[in-house]
Length: 404
Ligand SMILES: *[C@@H]1O[C@H](CO)[C@@H](O)[C@H](O)[C@H]1NC(C)=O
Ligand SMILES: *[C@@H]1O[C@H](CO)[C@@H](O)[C@H](O)[C@H]1NC(C)=O
Ligand SMILES: *[C@@H]1O[C@H](CO)[C@@H](O)[C@H](O)[C@H]1NC(C)=O
Ligand SMILES: *[C@@H]1O[C@H](CO)[C@@H](O)[C@H](O)[C@H]1NC(C)=O
Ligand SMILES: *[C@@H]1O[C@H](CO)[C@@H](O)[C@H](O)[C@H]1NC(C)=O
Ligand SMILES: *[C@@H]1O[C@H](CO)[C@@H](O)[C@H](O)[C@H]1NC(C)=O
Image (cartoon, rainbow, N blue to C red; front, top):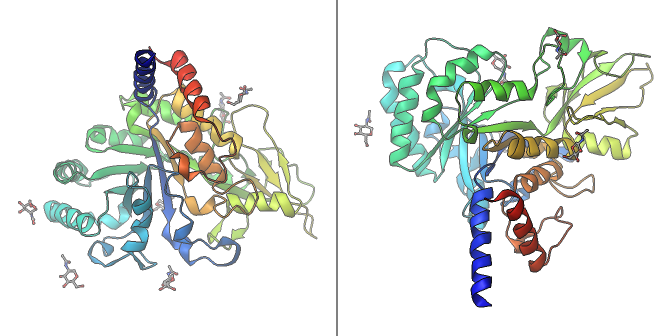
């Protein structure tokens, strides 16, 4: 009897490692400027759920901050930033720097720059550095720099990652030679609807499959990387925790693509045409916004506000719980990618203002990717409590389905 049980346990353990071979990362950016928001948008570092993500990346620091005792423009002390790792020692905490802050002009100082970076990361007990890449190809000393970073980071057991914008495939091409030097690449597959028409037509900002008028979809971007020999396990799919908004003038149709002008300024994120998810779900819940679901699993829904006195309405396209779940299933099962990356935690419903659980979207991604969560740390979104036998049964049956 004991032997059978042991064998079962071993089989289960085997299956866990086997099924866990892909989609093991959930990289969560936190825009630290969110800590300066007030009112409905207020965000406190104490709100961070330490078990939701595998990597927490604070954005952004600049190279001045590489010699500073506090982080970024918000001047947060490192002890506060590292607190989630005290609760969950497996959580990796990284800093992100924008590529434009790397100051490429001083190309002769690569070794010095790398040393300073390593010193900074060690001094403040960070686990690694992410570069938020938004630069077209050019004459930057990237190969040397990335290789030097990799060598130094390996010596110090640090993580080095890249987040890439997808505006032109040439940029992507430019990176193909550097894949070996990074631990993972977050493909920021959102804001796809960015051509000049974007100012005049409301449309889904991050479609998985359907046509985004200029022909780009998330799947085509991911396939592009895979077809250029990027290992799937290195890729993370970027998922937005915000919607893109437009203004539809009086009597305009709302079905996308819809004639529109650029959306309103959101006072929390201080961006035109960007609406955090918590603002969308609370507008739907309490301000009479109407949601239009898409029947296919290609794009998320859009929501439309009631008309203002001039007759114009706000239109916002976004990913809801269903769509982020479909995207996470795509990551895990369709393309077998390394994981997902969200921008950014502060725009999720982190304070449960919509009553569907805190961090609704990120929690759905975390569950779908199978990010482990200790039993004792149930979140508001863990509505289905499983008994141990249910868990074993579940692992066992999923093992039968997916283990050799
Ligand atoms: C770091 O800053 C200190 C004082 O703020 C300065 O003395 C030191 O030279 C700086 N180090 C580097 C490498 O820039
Ligand atoms: C955020 O708030 C801190 C403290 O109130 C202040 O020092 C800092 O300048 C603010 N940063 C930004 C970017 O507004
Ligand atoms: C960088 O660090 C390495 C190893 O600690 C050292 O050998 C090298 O001299 C340093 N380079 C600079 C420019 O400080
Ligand atoms: C990327 O850089 C360009 C030009 O430097 C800037 O206009 C654009 O806003 C940046 N995009 C993002 C998402 O940071
Ligand atoms: C997508 O849209 C573009 C531009 O409107 C068009 O040229 C292309 O044929 C469309 N592709 C598909 C698969 O519908
Ligand atoms: C959409 O996705 C859900 C969840 O993965 C799945 O149950 C459903 O069958 C899908 N629908 C279509 C039309 O593919």
